[in-house]
Length: 189
Image (cartoon, rainbow, N blue to C red):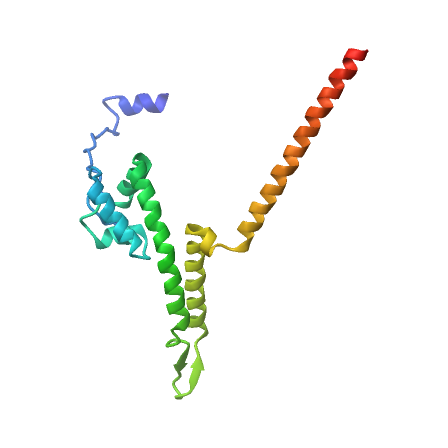
C-alpha cells in the first residue's frame, strides 16, 4: 500500500507515462493483416494447403495476399464450412507426404561423399536426416488419414474398444437381472 501511495504522490520520481495504442500486426508470420472471411478466399487457402507439404505459416509467408495463420485458425473455429474444407485440404496433404517419402527414399545422391583423399565414404548424417524426413512425413500422413496411412495399433484399439463395449453391455444386463432378483426377494421377506 505504501509503495502505491509513493508512486502516486507528486514528489515521486516514478511517473506514469501514457502508452501509445499499438496496432496489432502479424510480425514474422507473413500473410495479410486480419481480414473478413470470404468463400473465395477460403477456397484459395484450401487449394494452397492441399497442394503443399509446407506449414501454414510458410504458406502465408509465401502468399502475402492471404491472411495470417492466426486469422485462418479463427476462421476455422467460426466457420464450419471452411473448417471442413480445410480438413479435407489437410487430408489431401497426406497423399503428398507419401509421394515425398518415395522421392526421399529413392534419392541416393547424398548417401556417399568423396573425402579429401578422393575415397568414396558413406554419409551417415544425410542418411539419418532422410530417415527423419520420411518418419515425419509418415507420422503426419498417418494422423491425417489413419485408415490409409496409420499404424496397426489404431486398429487394435478399435477392436479393444469394441470388446470392452460388449463386456460393459453384458455386465449391465447382468446387473439389471440381479436388481430384478433382489426386488423379487425383497417382496418375499
